[in-house]
Structure formats: C-alpha cells, structure tokens
Image 1 (cartoon, rainbow, N blue to C red):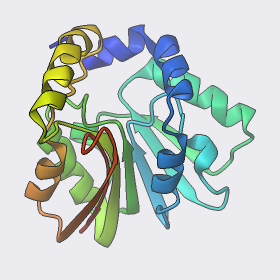
Image 2 (image 1 turned 180 degrees about the vertical axis):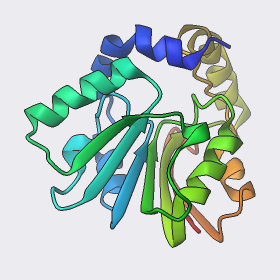
Image 3 (image 1 turned 30 degrees about the vertical axis):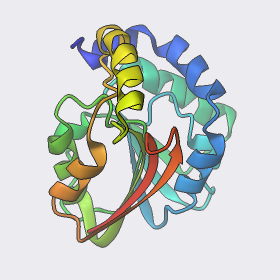
Image 4 (image 1 turned 180 degrees about the horizontal axis):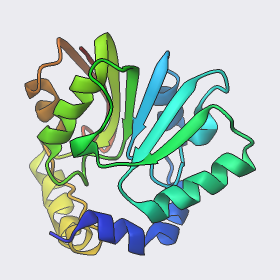
Length: 199
C-alpha cells in the first residue's frame, strides 16, 4: 500500500475538489450536528466539514498532511472562523493529554489510517469519560456482490493515495473499549455508516 501521507500531500488539490463535490453533505451535517463541548476532528483534511460547525464551538482539527491543512487554513480565513485551530499531527500518536475532549469527529478517515486500531485507541484515550466519538465512515460490506465491486476499486485507491475500501471499521471501533456503539446505514446498503461510540 502506498504511503497515505505522501499520497494526500501530492493530490491535495484534486482530493479537495472531489471532496467538495461528493454527495455527502447532508450526512456530514448530520454527524457534525451531534458534536458538542470541546471538539477534536481527526483527519480534517482540506476542511470540507468546516462550514457545518456552529461558530460557538471550541474545535481543534488535526491531519498528517501539511498540504491538506494549507487548504483547510485558507477555508478558515475565507469563512472568517475564529473558533477552529489546526495542528499537523498523526492520529496514531496524538500529543493531547488523556481525557481532553468531549467529542471526537471522524469523517471518511479510517479508510486511510495505516494502523486503524491504534488510531481508534488514541481517540478513546483523548476522550473524556462519557464523551462520544462520531464516525461517518465507509467500510467493508456484509454483501458479497458489493465487496467484489469495492475490491476492484480498492486496487486503484490503495496504490494512488493509500486508501482502503475494505476496512472492517465498525467492528474495530467495538473492539477498542467503547461502552456503547450504535450505527446507522446511510449509503450502498451498509457501506457508508454513521457510528456513535460512547466512552
């Protein structure tokens, strides 16, 4: 699999255009509307979710791609946002203290994290007790015909930007220690899901 950081740095502008034109806006807004308190968005990328946050929220966004963060910073300026700070950081090794955030948001991130369980354990660590992690993620299906289609696409995505379409993300979330995990299917049967995990 290609190094995803290098892939996103190289293709940042193209990825931004794709992200802004994907038909997922209503699902992203639904996910962001669940966020409250002190918020961390992991894998914030080019900042496609910035327009959905209320301006009274305290938000930190992280990403491992400097080029993606440059695009996100431009959006922060264009949208006149003063409540959002960005940091270049790897989700697998976050330098936040334990029990820091009330909410962690992740949208289409865990298809790319090289060690997804390590990243999920870090999310669990930085969440306050009783806090929640909100995931809008695409993943492996339980339907064979859909997985065949995903497998074909996966031959391209893993080589170009290091993104896997066949992750078992919901089960990974359940296995890292969250007290309660609920999910809702959104697109392609059970491929795109909204998952809320409570610590």
